Amino acid sequence: MFDTVLRLCNAAVGDLQTWLFVSCVQPMLWHLHLMGLDDLAYDNLIWVIAGALQVMLIYAVLRPLEWLLPLEHWENRRGIGVDVIYTLINRLGLVPLLLFLTLQPLFDQSLAWLRLHGWVNLNLDALWPGMRLHPLLGFLVYLVVLDFAGYWYHRLQHQVGWWWELHAVHHSQRKLSLWADDRNHLLDDALQAAFFATLALFIGLPPGQFVALSLVGGALQSLQHANIRFDFGRLGERLLVGPRFHRLHHAVGFGHELGHGNRARLYGCNFGVLLPWWDQLFGSADFDTPLQPTGVRAQLPAPAGRGEDLGRGFWAQQWLGLRRMTEALLRRRAPAMPD
Image (cartoon, rainbow, N blue to C red; front, side, top):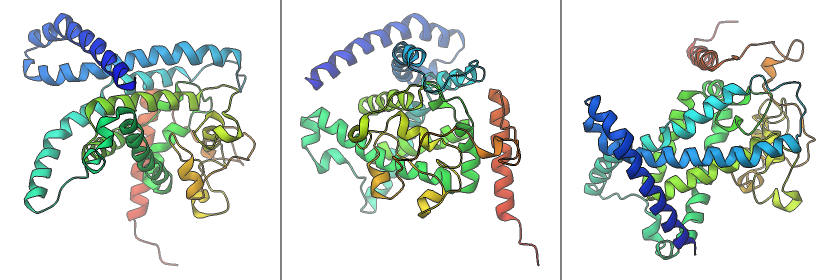
């Protein structure tokens, strides 16, 4: 059943991809004398089509829910518009798939060199042939593997000082909505896309599965950030990251800043991307703290914070994030002053 649905969807998207390429993209490349990019442009159209359909579906489902069942009531939605820009850049901007495709030649050359020296990549399909016979099983295995890597990647974003200054762009939104998931510094996005594209190539993840996993993950993360009075229940929240679990990750003073308890909690809690299993396994889960205001402590007025402006518009957020990252790196390299 899953295999049949996947084939039908691939066929429909393939037809649309060909029509758009022949009707729109190819003539544009011809006029711009960029026909050398035709193969890459054709491949990337898959991401554009899938991303556009995903954004429309997410908006159609989640926006009415935010209106009917809001968790927070705001006087206005000012400041959310910039998150729409981030979403369109990320979901239609081709960054993950572009890196996946451009890294492929370099990765193939590296694999050839490694094989000459007796090393091979970890191809999960080869280790477990049943994944090829059952596409849904393969999809779930790849999801768990990538989510495990995503947990540690996310946790490091909070524990490495200069990296947190980039990631703080994501946490600086104090009005979480369905658009907030993609509010990231572009450099942070590029690092993440390169990491997961490389990992996907290393474990032998097929491009079609890569796109499918990205779309499913993106949809679920939009739900996690939505301003909806909704949770998966006591059992469901321990199986899949829901809005309440993830909102605590964004909570000022609880989710991502100096707290108490184990070392993981010193840098926050609830780092899981799709599965809360890793938080439960490694002691960073919090299911009990009441919901708190979201944002970054530095944004709060004194004495609770420093009243710091982390940027109100897209370019201001990008520039200030880059400046804070540079300052953090310089502080780390500066010699210690004598007492």
